[in-house]
Image 1: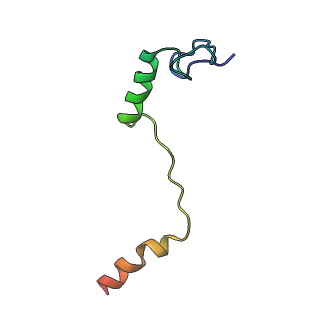
Image 2: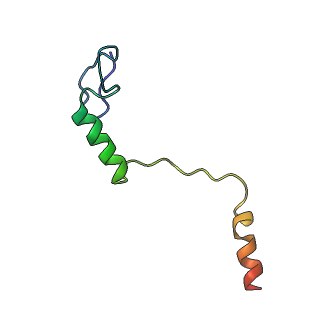
Length: 61
């Protein structure tokens, strides 16, 4: 069975009003962690770093 991502309590996703959390309390705790930047999504760059710094270098030259 799945577990609540905050408190690790075993949960039944079919009967919960706050999936994937076991309660409103755990849902709010998780939201607070996102807002306090306790969690983050990694930033993945696409392309070369030169593309991002190109216009700044031209302005200095």
